[in-house]
Image (cartoon, rainbow over all chains, first blue to last red):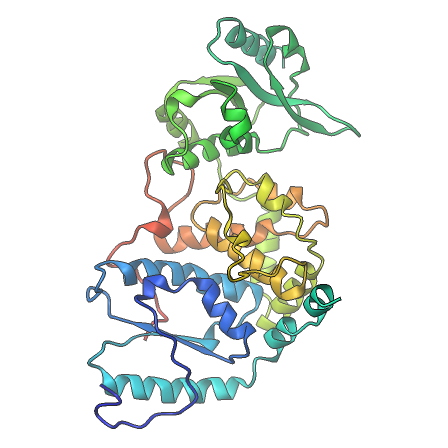
Length: 128
Length: 267
C-alpha cells in the first residue's frame, strides 16, 4: 500500500522478498551484514495473520533466541529492526523504514562486522 | 567399577545387548570410549572422575547402530541426551539398555524412559558452576568487549568440526555447513566463516543442547564454544521455561510455538 498510496520513504532499503517470515533463516540476516549492510529490517505478517497459518509464530520463537545469541557475541541487536507490517499498513511501513534508517544511521557503518567479512584470507586461499 | 563390569557381562552373556558402550583406559592417562562385544572383554570397562565424555554420541552413529542392541554406561548428561534424541524420534526404548551411573558413581538400573525421566527430576542438571561463572562474566561485558572476545577466540578456530563430531545432537547425515550451492559458509577457516559456523551451530542446538560441554572439551584449540550453546540453554529456559533432555516425548522448542510467546522487541 505504501507505493499505491504514493507515500515517500527513505531510499536506503533494499527489499528482499520471502514467502514467509518462517522462511527467513537467521543466517540470511548475518549474510546481509557480511555483504555490507549496516542494519536489517525483518518484517512480515502479524501473528494470527499468517498465510501459512503458523510461519510467523515459529519465526518469532527463533528470533527471540537468535537476538539474545547475537547480543552474547557482541553484535548490536539494535542493528536488526523487527516489525510486523501487514500488506495494508502502507503508512506503518514508510514510517518504519524512516525511523529504522535514522536509528541505524546513528549507530554508524557496521565496521566491525564488515572488517571481519572482508578479511582477505579467503581470496588468498582460493585464488592462489 | 566391578558392579558395572558384572552387569555388562550379564547383559552380553544373556544376549540382552550385543554391545556395551563404556569407558576404557586410553593413552596419556586419558579415558576413551570402548565398545565391548564379548563377555570376557568386560574387564576393560572403567569408571572414574576422568570419564566425562558424552558416550551417547555413538548411539546414533550408523556403524554402531548396526551392531545390534546397545547398552550404554549413562551418566546424567548421557541420560539427558538419550531422552532428547528420543523426543526427536531418533531412538526408541527398545534400542538401548541404560546402565545409569549416579554422581556418587553407583550403578542404577533404569528400565524405560519413564524411569530415566523420574530419576532426572531428582538430580541437578544445571550448567556447571565454573561455566555459569564464565557465562555471567561474559554477559556483563559491553557489546564491544564481547565482540572483541569472541572475534579473538573464534579466529583461532581451525574448522576441524570436532565440536560437531563430539556433539550427540549433531546427527544430521548432511550438515547445513556442507551446503555448497551456494557456498553457505566458507570452507576455509577464515574469521567470517568461523563466526558464522559457530553462530549456526549454536542456533541449531538452541533448545536441544543438554549442557554436557562435550563440544568445548573436544575443541583442540580450547575455544569455549560450549558457552555459545549454553547461552541458548539459559535463554530457552527463561523465554519458554523448557529444559531439554528431561522428557522423551516433549516437542522441540524451536519447531513448536505458543500463540502467546512474549517478546519485547518486535514493533
